[in-house]
Image 1 (spheres, rainbow, N blue to C red):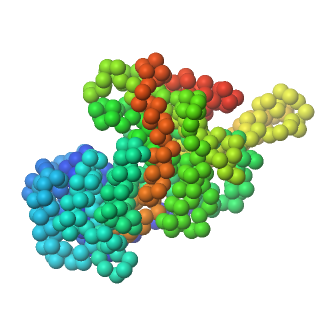
Image 2: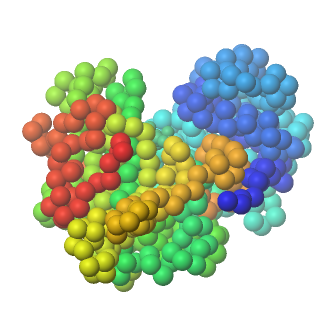
Image 3: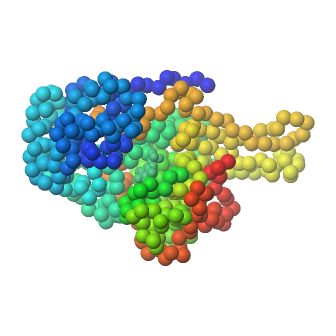
Length: 502
Ligand code: BG6
């Protein structure tokens, strides 16, 4: 196998300030700050750059630096002291509540001084790494304090103000619309970067390259050759102490509305003209519009809710909770390419292993050319497997003659593995996404219409799950394959999930 060495990350050219709300929170500690440090290590942060971290408990500059260093050491044990020093020298604190006007007056003053010192030309990238309830209050106050101005997207030669918004972007369709209206009253769409961290994963980005960069797949990628597609995002962990958050969220908001539907769109969308934000996102939105709405009996027959045994004893979880930790969905896409091809989605916590994977199951061969019924029955249809994580790679199951004197046919895998091919681990999704936001490149961020279309699709599922009775939710063993009802849903169609554990 030949493969090029991975490209080192390229420094964004524009000088800028990063204004990080929620700097002492869980997300900043686990994801955002380690990603920034990896970029610092690779000399990939802009040359003229500084960070202002804001939170109630940020303290002064020295306190914030000490706090972040301690937190970050848990995730980056091998961090070189000089990398930390370089990073910390450009890190500043504003301590205050996100809902107090005083915090923003202080922030504006601090920014003015630091922008002159670091020569960042007034360019601002704001990151809302806070609970969702703080998004609107922060945006309103930043706008009132003149920290972000509507329309400043940097395209007209002036400075830019861009805002990265974390998930969850809304709690349901109505609240997502309300949040979106609020966001658009303060910012132009071109200033908004809605994070779905799955889009920053190398393997997810590779879906389009694999589909459209190879001549051999596109002609087969349709209802004439594909029997069905399975998309699995399985996690082996439980809710890990976040029971109260999870009770409010559940698996559909946490994983389906965003990550699974984004993967589905990349697998099923039409080819974009190029990789520009509007082309790619326009094609995804078109695909979401082709999803058949789940209505009537489909909400029962095409959707399986599950909950792992022991979830109800997690801290913060109600003893009679019917919050699903698992769901399987049979989706249909009503367009010329996919009519009649089911897309089976499943995701859950407390499953046998951590595995995210797309499987394209091709149609069975139509006749037996070997003359022996016994031989032909052994021929399994081709399956293309794109392993998103872990063990990132792609394999294709093909039939092969088993060596020997008989006509025996077996299945073998043609396989490619990222680590072997590129001799490196994939960078963390947050590194790529931060760099893209610093460059103003929005292709890997979700556009307003996409997000709302995804909410529209899952809303009937949320409505059903809101009123589930305890006996309507299938329980499954922690560490198992998921509920039997999910297996049965495919069985009725004469199909089966490819095993999580082989
Ligand atoms: C997050 C969910 O968006 O994705 C978590 O809120 C989930 O519940 C996580 O565990 C999975 O992401 P990854 O990258 O760790 O597979």
